[in-house]
Length: 98
Image 1 (cartoon, rainbow, N blue to C red):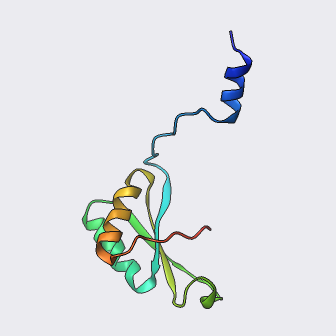
Image 2: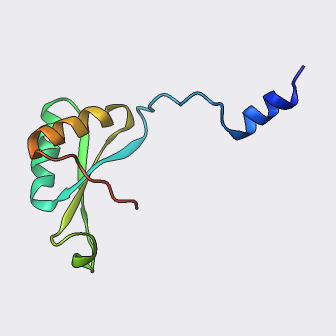
Protein backbone atom coordinates (compact mmCIF):
# COMPACT_ATOMS: atom_id res chain seq x y z
CA UNK A 1 0.00 0.00 0.00
CA UNK A 2 1.45 3.40 -0.95
CA UNK A 3 2.35 5.65 1.93
CA UNK A 4 2.79 9.38 2.22
CA UNK A 5 6.56 8.89 2.20
CA UNK A 6 6.52 6.94 -1.07
CA UNK A 7 4.30 9.60 -2.66
CA UNK A 8 6.68 12.31 -1.40
CA UNK A 9 9.69 10.48 -2.81
CA UNK A 10 7.90 9.91 -6.11
CA UNK A 11 7.06 13.60 -6.45
CA UNK A 12 10.25 15.21 -5.14
CA UNK A 13 13.19 13.30 -6.28
CA UNK A 14 14.32 9.87 -5.18
CA UNK A 15 14.53 8.78 -8.82
CA UNK A 16 17.33 6.83 -10.42
CA UNK A 17 19.10 8.71 -13.21
CA UNK A 18 18.04 7.75 -16.71
CA UNK A 19 20.64 5.96 -18.82
CA UNK A 20 22.03 7.94 -21.78
CA UNK A 21 19.77 7.76 -24.82
CA UNK A 22 21.65 6.81 -28.02
CA UNK A 23 18.92 8.44 -30.13
CA UNK A 24 19.20 11.87 -28.47
CA UNK A 25 21.60 14.54 -29.74
CA UNK A 26 23.42 16.76 -27.23
CA UNK A 27 26.07 19.46 -27.36
CA UNK A 28 29.58 18.18 -26.68
CA UNK A 29 31.33 21.50 -26.91
CA UNK A 30 31.20 25.16 -27.85
CA UNK A 31 34.52 25.90 -29.53
CA UNK A 32 36.03 28.53 -31.84
CA UNK A 33 34.77 27.97 -35.37
CA UNK A 34 38.24 27.33 -36.77
CA UNK A 35 38.50 24.30 -34.43
CA UNK A 36 34.96 22.96 -34.92
CA UNK A 37 35.47 21.20 -38.28
CA UNK A 38 38.79 19.72 -37.17
CA UNK A 39 37.32 18.40 -33.90
CA UNK A 40 34.21 17.00 -35.59
CA UNK A 41 36.38 15.15 -38.13
CA UNK A 42 38.56 13.82 -35.31
CA UNK A 43 35.50 12.57 -33.39
CA UNK A 44 34.19 10.85 -36.52
CA UNK A 45 37.56 9.17 -37.07
CA UNK A 46 37.35 7.87 -33.48
CA UNK A 47 33.96 6.32 -34.26
CA UNK A 48 31.81 8.95 -32.52
CA UNK A 49 29.00 10.30 -34.74
CA UNK A 50 29.45 14.08 -34.66
CA UNK A 51 28.31 17.17 -36.53
CA UNK A 52 29.06 20.83 -36.03
CA UNK A 53 27.10 24.00 -36.56
CA UNK A 54 28.10 27.63 -36.81
CA UNK A 55 26.90 29.68 -33.86
CA UNK A 56 25.96 33.06 -35.26
CA UNK A 57 25.96 35.82 -32.68
CA UNK A 58 25.63 39.48 -33.46
CA UNK A 59 27.27 40.37 -30.13
CA UNK A 60 30.74 38.90 -30.53
CA UNK A 61 32.06 40.63 -27.40
CA UNK A 62 29.35 39.32 -25.07
CA UNK A 63 30.34 35.66 -24.76
CA UNK A 64 33.33 35.33 -27.07
CA UNK A 65 35.55 37.48 -29.20
CA UNK A 66 35.45 35.26 -32.29
CA UNK A 67 32.92 33.24 -34.27
CA UNK A 68 32.07 30.01 -32.49
CA UNK A 69 30.83 26.58 -33.49
CA UNK A 70 28.85 23.94 -31.62
CA UNK A 71 29.73 20.26 -31.80
CA UNK A 72 26.86 17.80 -31.39
CA UNK A 73 27.11 14.08 -30.59
CA UNK A 74 24.76 11.37 -29.37
CA UNK A 75 24.04 11.43 -25.65
CA UNK A 76 25.64 8.06 -24.95
CA UNK A 77 29.00 9.23 -26.42
CA UNK A 78 29.08 12.73 -24.88
CA UNK A 79 31.60 12.00 -22.11
CA UNK A 80 33.94 10.30 -24.55
CA UNK A 81 33.67 13.22 -27.00
CA UNK A 82 34.35 15.80 -24.28
CA UNK A 83 37.43 13.86 -23.23
CA UNK A 84 38.78 13.83 -26.80
CA UNK A 85 38.07 17.55 -27.23
CA UNK A 86 39.92 18.28 -24.00
CA UNK A 87 42.89 16.13 -25.06
CA UNK A 88 43.19 17.93 -28.41
CA UNK A 89 42.60 21.53 -27.31
CA UNK A 90 44.14 21.34 -23.83
CA UNK A 91 41.10 22.88 -22.13
CA UNK A 92 37.73 21.48 -21.11
CA UNK A 93 35.03 22.20 -23.72
CA UNK A 94 32.69 25.02 -22.84
CA UNK A 95 28.93 24.78 -23.21
CA UNK A 96 26.48 27.55 -23.93
CA UNK A 97 22.78 27.18 -23.26
CA UNK A 98 20.58 27.49 -26.31
